[in-house]
Length: 257
Image 1 (cartoon, one colour):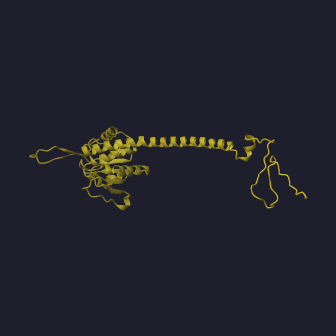
Image 2 (cartoon, rainbow, N blue to C red; image 1 turned 180 degrees about the vertical axis):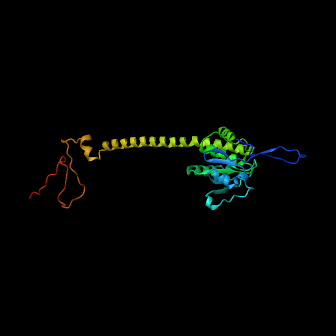
């Protein structure tokens, strides 16, 4: 919540019509490992180190990157995001969200900041909650709004968050469907292979060329015997081989005159 010590109203000359701009300079803790604040607070090293933050992400193109002392162990990153509804912030959603998730896995706390800690930094926190906490956009925004009252992404970023939410939802639905499809395909192909192998075995057992089954399937009649008949002369010209059922010609003897 906004406290009186961190609540500031940016004023202008009294003769100019203006809308007061609310700025929250406090460090708002969204989750146990994710924080958000404004630029001025992010540059206060003692304030950052007191929260145990080890990674600071700058999400404003116009703001210079903060250089922390090397011995502090605080990592400083910057992504050139412009607070404009037409800016394609969607292309950076996965990069920043995955980096925050990697820090959470390593038990590192991450601080996101932009100029006021209201639009750009809030947008990327919402993208992180949508992807890695699997929260719908309206629930994620309600959570962030309860932690930081001034949270308000611009209209263009909000529409990009809706597309990102739809994309993440479709990804969670498509991947299980693909896995189920491949599992069913593998099971079906296994059944087909089993049927084919069984069919091959049946065919092989019925083939007469298999010596093991030839006599049982096609029994040979013992009363029927056929000898081979050669139409050409063998090694001995005078010897011929005839079937026994063909009557051999009698020898013709020359009678003496």
